[in-house]
Length: 188
Length: 370
Image (cartoon, rainbow over all chains, first blue to last red; front, side):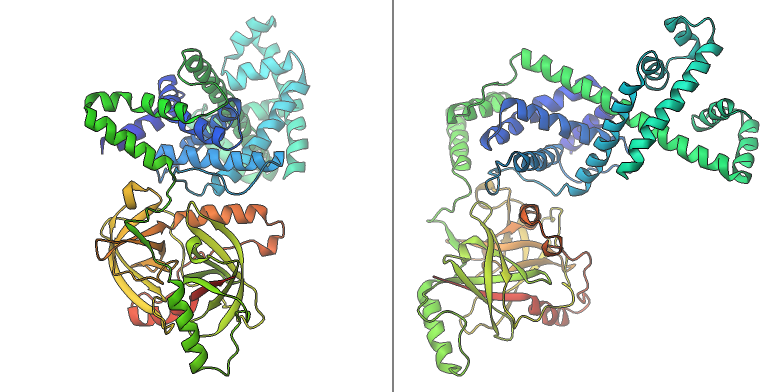
């Protein structure tokens, strides 16, 4: 029972970007993933990458309202890593039969489809932001991502007043939306 | 309203930073003006994407920082080679605290033995476990007897082939995919026999010694594909004490046999987490037979029994089937040939007798030959 409570607390911490929770998850689960990847044709850096992706998947899962984890964190992370690693081996043409592991795993296809979709939109947003150029990129990041106020941003960017900054922000936003949706709708 | 103001208002509306009066007014405007409604929907979608972009970026940063910090602190061996030594060291590091508490020489030896046993894969311990596949002689005899009784019907086993092993299996897809145990298939060829005694050719599609699961596909013109599969395969763990039953072909006369029992442990032999321990009288030939729970879901695949203890048997957990299907489907480029599992249980649950008479049509006796 206690273990279950701990897992819940960890997931809650993860959902709130708590660095202690993230550290605990790395400490308790990374080495078994490292082990698995190394045993199946991969390197330490490969293990780092798949584990990070698994952490992000879990993070995004705990963010949703309807979140339920029907298995242990360990099993979940392992299942995601296994899936991702299998996919990567396929891409590299290194796949040679079923992977060797003794860990229990569950089917994560649904979550991985979700991941692929998010990954695609993340990339589109990233590209759109970069092609905006400065100061648009930083202005929008300041307002929408870092949640700074217009007054503060005006000062940061040297606009004479908040209204001017707002004007600029609006123009930038329209450009970003256009860039984003142009790509996003192709993908759909 | 100008576009700029409109966007600002929409943002205030979406972030819930307007007075209730403004809100009511805006909602009315939105309701009556489809263009504005459309803008709200579109802007919300966009802001959601921005938000998930921000979230993903911040968690990626946090995980990278944490990882680098722990790596610098020497939490892991960053070497790309893994030897048995590092395995043990890693395990040792992981369990250091636990073992320290219960430290005794005996305790450590036990741990070391467990590690050793675990690292030797779930290979079967010949002395204590008995695979439930049928012995060669028995099958050979059976073959003769059958040949005697129904000599008009030609067997699908090639004339000079030698029967090596046999067991049970069950259909999981109407296209003719059958799950069984790897140890049931000792030869390269296989035939399956349905509950009315009809033999069918089958191809071995996949077999994995580790999980002891294998996949066959019926490859025979005489195969009458059923409309649907009446049972689902359970993904989640089953509970201790859950009532279970199995249907398989342990007997030589190829009659299907029903067995009932309960789940006695959530791990298998020596703590193997891929299996369940069950209390059921298991005879050779049950290998590969499905294990159903009360709801008629498949929760496992029979595979071994303990030699000394009568009635103690083990079954591979059903979630392993999903792994198998995932790897098979991953290699299958033809979309229509991919395995699709049933989504609903359609077997009659009220009456066990009629349930069984329905289920038995999906359970096959399996013979492997060379």
